[in-house]
Image 1 (tube, rainbow, N blue to C red):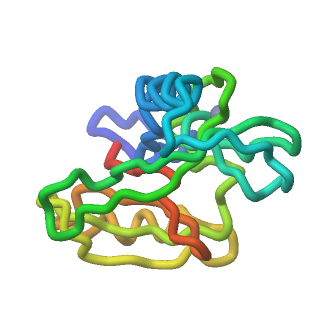
Image 2 (image 1 turned 180 degrees about the horizontal axis):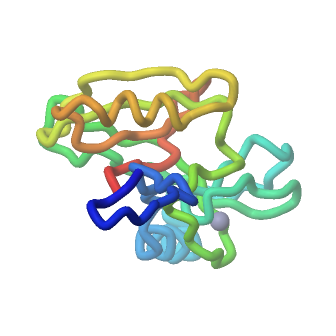
Length: 167
Ligand SMILES: [Zn+2]
C-alpha cells in the first residue's frame, strides 16, 4: 500500500480484532477465601487429569496433582432471560492472570464452542471451533454488528471458560 507521498507500508503483524478477558483476579481471590472458609459451594479438588481442570484465571490446564477450587460463577448476571451460573475451576494457589490478551489461549484451541451475545446479554449465535482454529470463528461472530461479546465454553460439558471482546 502507498500513501500520497509514495511511501510503502508493509503490514508486518496481523493485529487481532479481539481481546481475551480472563476471570477477574478479585473473583479468583474471593473463591480462594471462600474455599479456605469451607463454604459449602466451594470444593477443593486435586487435578487427576492433564486436560480436565481449566483454570479460568491463568487460562491453563491445572497440572495433575495441583489443587483447584470448583465453584459456581454467573457468567451472565441474574435478571436476564439468558442469565446463567455454572461451575468453574481456578487454581487454589495464587496464579498469574492470563496476560496475552491479543492471543487466543493455546491450551483451549480445541474442544470449545463460542457463543455470541448482544449488548442485552441475549445469546444470538453460537459455533463450535473446528480444527483447533478459533480465530476465523471469532472473526465471523464479531462481524455481526449485534454481537457485543463472546463466551468460550467447553464443547462437551458447556462450562464457561473465558470471555472475548472486540479489541
Ligand atoms: Zn490458574
